[in-house]
Image (cartoon, rainbow, N blue to C red; front, side, top):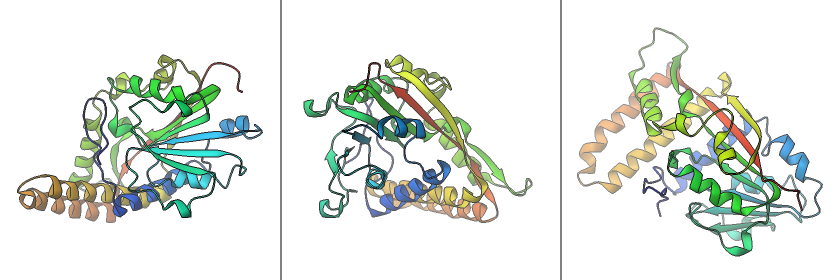
Amino acid sequence: MTETSLDGSPYIFGHDYRSSIRLNYQHMLIKKLCDEQLLSPNVHQSIASRSSIRIADIATGTALWLTELSDVFPAHAELHGFDISSNQYPPQEWLPKNVFLHEHDAFKPFAPEYLGSFDVVNLRFFITLLNKENIQPLLSNLITLLKPGGFLQWLDFDPRSAGAIAIDPNLPMPRTQSVVTMIRKAQPDVNLWILHDAEPFEAAGLDTTAYKSIHLRNYLRPVWNHCHIMGMKELARRLSRDTTGGSDKLSPLLQQIKELEAEFAQGASIDAQWFMMIGRMPGAPR
């Protein structure tokens, strides 16, 4: 099953075990960048003492973020994951007893039993599906899940930050540059809907509580490079599966991936920043 946005643009990656490896690897990278914290400290502090806690993870993927969160909160906390495909979910028997996973498209209305019932809605790694036409419908749909006083936490890569860098400024890195160009072109209208004052949340009716830029640390660049290589290989697999004459189109791409690996091995990388945007539903928490 391929996730699509409201304008029909497809999710460019897959849902197989190799995709799961990339997602889990990327999770570990982001967790390091966030000082091992799954929730913003202010959000965590605000909800930790509540007698009932309900948290939703949107596009949960392998559910690793959600299952790790089960170690942070008491057993009475309900942790729900939603994804358009259940192909990457662990077996139910391996999940903590307070983790519940559902198959659901985040762009479509949620079932009545979930509406207005969550203290936190978490969204990560979703930006490749977004544009200025569909971001507000998505946010409007997600905030239907929130209790009064509930939080929407969104962490993602900022494509505007992409740039090719290298240890040696004289290193030729045409493949690294080409990936940067691809990243920047993927959301050409991003400046119209992501601003540092978190305007998208305010337009959706949330009170903005934080917008934080998260910078890539040099010791994590090899991990980030690996994420790019794995992502490119996913694209190659999709090309070979989804097109006729795939092998003819695939060979140049595989060669480009080899060249990208060689540049990375010589000290090239893609400079990057992430952002964490937090909004709060008006009203007193209940």
